[in-house]
Length: 63
View 1 (cartoon, rainbow, N blue to C red):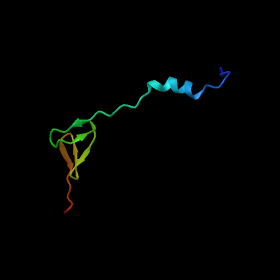
View 2 (cartoon, rainbow, N blue to C red):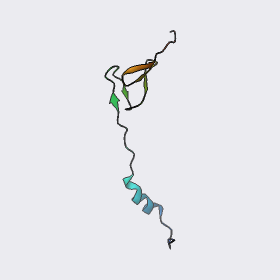
View 3 (cartoon, helix red, strand yellow):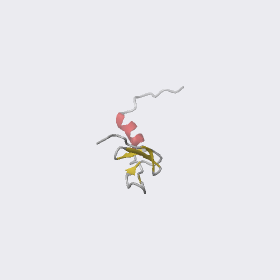
View 4 (cartoon, one colour):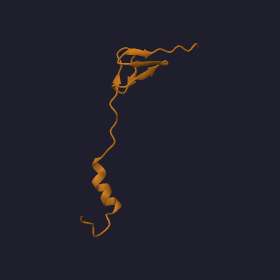
């Protein structure tokens, strides 16, 4: 296998990696609750766990 004759500098490595950028996650709004959440993930609103606009686990804690 070939080996580099000289060390690659950090700036040269960084130049190559400039195209790998962090992207902002896409968010969706629930039509039932109006909560903003990640798509295809469960989310909580007022202690209740929702998925796809339906309650999965209802909060039974007494206030």
